[in-house]
Length: 336
Image (tube, rainbow, N blue to C red; front, top):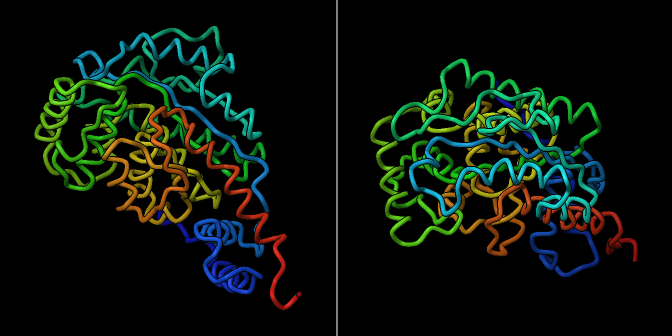
């Protein structure tokens, strides 16, 4: 479905409000732009500081991780899910600091995590190696998208005013980069990054794997076909999550490479969805910047982060709140 845009009337009124503040023209820089965006998605001028922010980490393993594209083994994925649940992962620390509710879901981890109670939406154990075969069947793709949509509805029903999609899965930068390359018509060498920190030889091999995957699939426009061929269950769930949020008029802070790949596909699944997105940060992965440019999103932060998990998006939340507070509390020239 096509997504209705955020309120153009509120955007225009917010722009007038910013211009009337008792500060030099343009002095608030990107904080003003964030305030205007918040006003448009809330249809309220000035906007309220986002209070109820919910982050969901979609975890999954990837068959391509068995083909030397990562500096770490896939056994790290379930270990990190335990860390999320225990509150000791990076994004969990940031979420506590910034009062963001954090939830982790096992969508396709290659392990039994039923003891943690995070597997209610599990689609399968690991996606298939995308350079050799389609990562998902058509049925698995639809199950993944539906899971993401359902989770978005649950979080919105629980009061979420702002959503974040996080990720966890060794090898996940390979499908994310491949999806962006295929969606934007780019060669593998422009999108391949070092991910978890592979060396030059590893990067060359990863680029070759992505190139093999792109040549296997050929030109594909349909976002469902792209996600099934080159994606994964967790990335598809994230795409469904973001698309459903936008359709419901709930804004999303987009994180790094994996979330941006999902967001790019969400915008293909539900045209216009990206108007409800704001980029939390710029990743060190080249494909992320290429996709952000295509979506017209300017990152809030540029800190050299490549942690994933939703950490950069959560770190951007205080600046969104600051942008709203400035619009609420800075005097207008006509009030002085």
